[in-house]
Length: 99
Image (cartoon, rainbow, N blue to C red; front, side, top):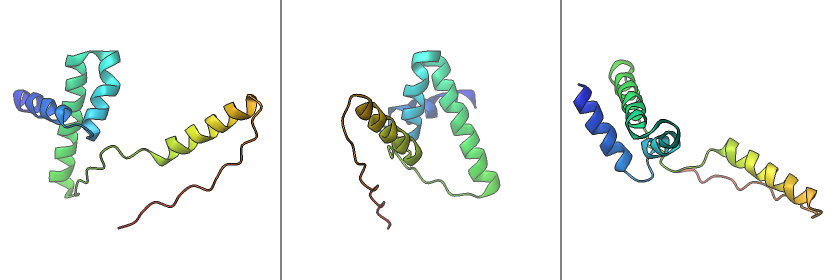
């Protein structure tokens, strides 16, 4: 099982734009390659367990930015511009497209 999880984690990391790729890139600088791969393998194992035992469906969101983080970043950038002496009027946030 360990080898399968390791191979699955390596494959998931190579898929550009996936949630697992982002997780790996976030952790590899702190933990190193091996521990970051095992963190991805752990996440995959928990995800598979949840799908099999609770019957939930998995939806890959990819590189969609977190709206809360984007809003915090915009507020921080506005504060920095105002500290530099610029007058900034924030525009209302665009509405997300719904399918």
